[in-house]
Length: 327
Image (tube, rainbow, N blue to C red):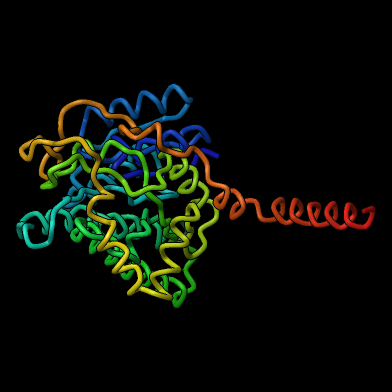
């Protein structure tokens, strides 16, 4: 298919797995992130899969750098077909202990980085009247949790921004599409590098999934850009629960959300983090929670194979009825 795809946050985690997934289908990749070592490793992986990949070191919190990245991809790879806004940073901290510059930085990267990426993509896609923008969201775009207020706020903001854009594209009858992929908890390296004030090592809230599930969903969404995609049953349950009984969620997370986001391992408060600058080295796509991480989601398979799922359900009903009729 040889689409031109830009992936932000491509040096590690979900972005790294997503770059591999797009490379496997033959896309030409613009790899955008701050960490050059991780980007170069991502390029090597893509090229082993037969793809062409362009490394574009970029801080997505800087609008000028994002605009320049888009122009470079267009110039060297061709017209951008898909833009994936995935880059993020976070801070694990009680709100009362957050510093204003920390909140600003999380917002610059996680929210404004998405805004800048969207604007850069639109500048090229709208005149051609084609292209797809994939916003990488989270169940936390709907449901805030303790210790991640800055990140949750950024994801909520992305949700609202994307809804406004979607309405405008529909009003203009544009063939440019925007879709948002709401992800579950994932085993990525971010928990090793995130800035944290917690006494113990931060962790994702179970159930945890491998980043390849997220990558599969993002690539699927680029081909099927419906309004939103909920990945895994836990995401759908959290979003639906917050719409129906948000107060129950408040009290449940008050009881479980603090300890549930920490392992039993102590962590030094001054450990290096990637909030302001990328840390050296290549961390790949996976974190330290692989033993707990699920590779697949039955709910996501059903969502993406509805006809097959309906056929299996119909066959099961038929077999049950036939068995009962014989008994």
